[in-house]
Length: 173
Image 1 (tube, helix red, strand yellow):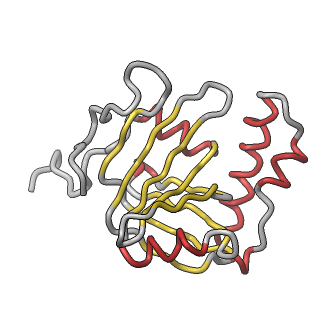
Image 2 (tube, one colour):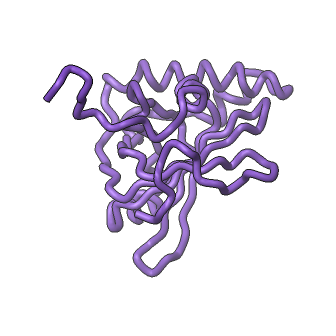
Image 3 (cartoon, one colour):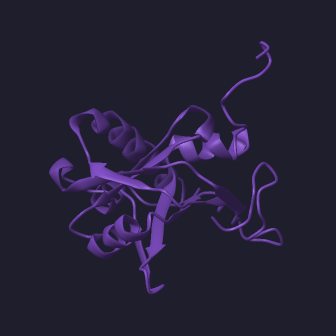
């Protein structure tokens, strides 16, 4: 192996979208059951690993029972990240999501997420108290769902909505 060769795959998502996702924007998580019934819920946080090779979303167990069950039974997940002030939106999908209980070590990512969402939501006219209420959580109630994105799509409203992003594959996992 020469110095230019690496075992790390090329990023699926372009740097500008990764930066938007990583700063903390609206996150909606969805899946479907084995019989293809959809489930959906707003995440109360997210964390993007450097390069976007791994993503973690946080859900309230109490509010997301069906969604968590669907992800646990199929491994499949679809997550939409949307910037409220611009409507810039990306959807990522994966077929091997992993679920664990949230831990104290997740708190910094959760707090960073809420602080960013407070700023985002304030830009569209709502006070931080609204965001804090919307994203209220108890650590002991949270699950962390991690996955490596296999597909990515532009979902920003407009003529390219639904188009696969040029950095990665678009065939179903």
